[in-house]
Image (tube, rainbow, N blue to C red; front, side, top):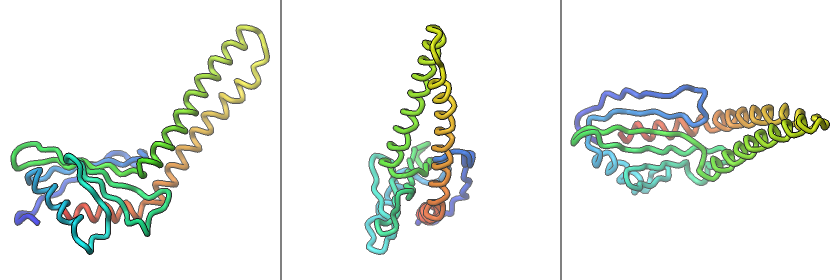
Length: 172
């Protein structure tokens, strides 16, 4: 650890976001921060799994504690000057879960647009508009359900997020 103690001021985004973000300004060099995390990941007693790629630090919960909604902490160390860096953090599900979640959102969004076009076409042809109208009601409700499922997932992984955050704070 560095001999001088950093005054940590953490800037966070709103709690509404499914993937919470934060940033911390550090009075320390970019390489010192990366080296400290690298050394921590090499220790036998380290609880969390992690790797570092080009200034990006990925921290995951241990395999034995992992579940579908387990979070991952992605840190990006950005060099501001020679002895100052900014640590940008992002909590989120594993990339596989996030891709699935975004794919379903994409399908719902494209379906909504498709049913809007179908509604316009049916109205132009003076045909029955029952199916498009029903789908234009169901799809936004499905989108809301997906949002609340994401919130449930975030709340399910909250204790693990806290542990990841504490681990990060201990190592900066």
